Amino acid sequence: MRGNETTIKQALKLFLKKYNLEEQVNEGRVYNVWNQTMGNFVVNRTTKLKFYKGKLIVYLNSSALRNELLMARTPIIQKLNEELGEELITELEIH
Image (cartoon, rainbow, N blue to C red; front, top):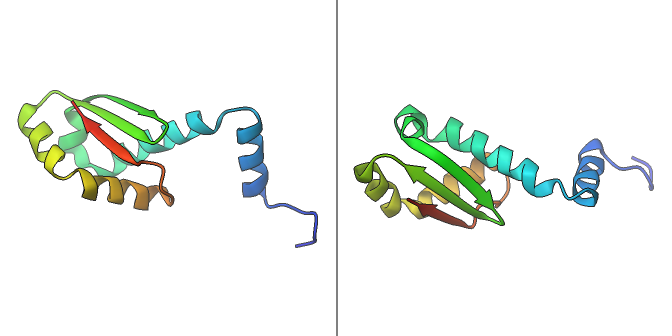
């Protein structure tokens, strides 16, 4: 690569940052990873997801599942970030 050339990935990141679209793209990525990683049992009991500034808020319709996931917050965050390829999720709140 020449001195002033950028990769498509770098150019896309600059574009998203310039037009304040980074957070929205990351939100979509987090939702997709949640649905792909957590399995049908959890996904089918997830009623709502919110992601903003590193905080993922998950709403569930099962109190038993809520308690199980609360105890496994740290491994869940690690697994989701691993799937994302970067540390986007810093906090997980489960309701």
